[in-house]
Length: 128
Image 1 (cartoon, helix red, strand yellow):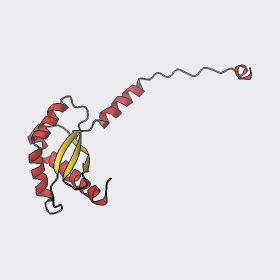
Image 2: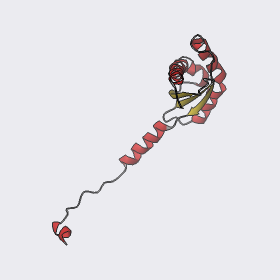
Image 3: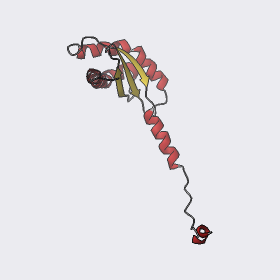
Image 4: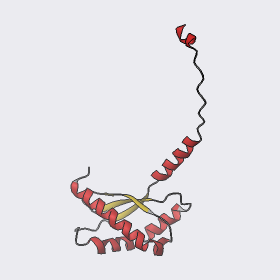
């Protein structure tokens, strides 16, 4: 169940984390474009699940390792930004969101579907 407060905090975290990733990401894990696709917060606001999207990157596992390695730095930056807005700075857990890749794969599959032209239907076949 999500409430008004958790939705508000989720939005705040997503916005601030996006800024942090944009400003500090190149120093922590290189020039990879990482998008915060969503943030879910537990009802007690003590933990946040951050979903990261890396569209068509070959070395996602290494990037996720780098993100997890710098999770304390990310949380520290987040704390500096939101300390006056929340009582507890949530623990951050990062997950890979592969939704965009799945959509891309589905689009590629749909492009490769061969549709046969319609055959003319004989009306006499239906009258039998």
